[in-house]
Length: 492
Image 1 (cartoon, rainbow, N blue to C red):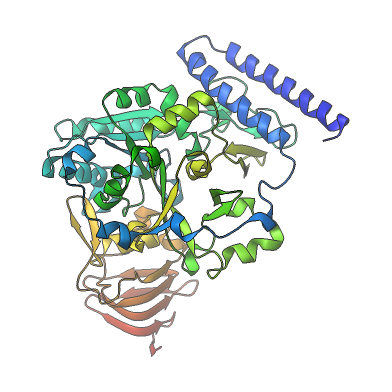
Image 2 (image 1 turned 90 degrees about the vertical axis):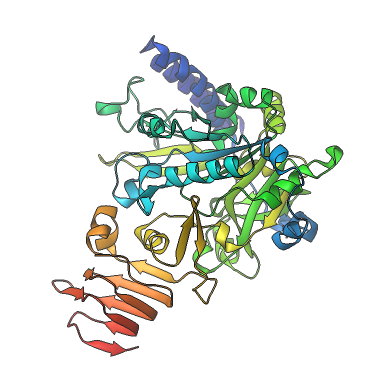
């Protein structure tokens, strides 16, 4: 960095500090106290952002992880369950990342409140899973929700319905950071309020904020005082992320001197996962490599399923005492993700974010575990929703399992067009969900509706051209068919 660049950086930091102080002075209530903590974290990430000198990894230094650092799930499962399952479970906390809204699926409010299976929401299923564990093994596994300012109020209202369930539920909020004008690199907020002109001025800074927020909330200390040792972290919309007793046993059975502080569940890539972060060996540490860190001329190599065969499911098992230690030492060094956004008025802003899995390099004796695909079942789109609502899965105690009547372990490839994007529109287009047990591939585009008791088998492509409408009649069986806009059914 040249002397001029250093002076420019210092000037930017000074100006940012002054702007943040102005924002804090705009309110004297409890909001200002919360914001003060958040702003300390923001100042740190902004300081590191200005100091960045180039890519966070040198491509030539990247190596495949040694085999003994990516364990086979089958080997772990062969070790069996812990003898004292109750004792092991009593040292566990389940934490769900619950900061996201359902806007990408056309819903208002927290995504966790969308109904996904038999009228159960993501949150319902999570509570059922943990309650089943607690009842079956007479255990006390608490559920922790990391909310954001977008989801906190609505989530807390809903939590009242679980008062009589055998699950202790705690919440804490991730930080609130100011969005930055891309040109001036200054906050766009005029005060600490979040309405009117300030509605788009703030953002939750990614799930990497979990470590600081969990620690700052005081909840981490509370759980440590209760004898909790590990937290299982996952996205609330990943319906495959249930507590796995074999992985828990592996963690608990390690000698104290070699205790594993971090396990990342990875699974084999398919063509649809080529953008997912992967584990690499870098300077003698396991490290998460995200596509945003990859130099442009190596992106195709990163997406290759032959060189980088696994990707991060974001199911993580982390030592609670280790989180406390790293927070106290201030040694968590997470790569910054610069997320550009264009607001409704056309203003270009940037958000500085971090990812929870990026911390793997900071923990002792970290491991990857290559788990079955069934542990990665995210619902990000209406196409995913169709799969989990169908007879491909059966629901028991909050957990979805692939139907034994399905001959192939893999799920069908489903692509629903824009007419199905919003959940409300999606539900109107199906009188009930088709039989998909023998389906391999489904593409639907345009104005298409499905009658009752439709069966889809093999490869089915249904395309209604602009201005056309296709109604698949009740009881129809489509096997290896193309249905086009003129309603002719052709062998495929």
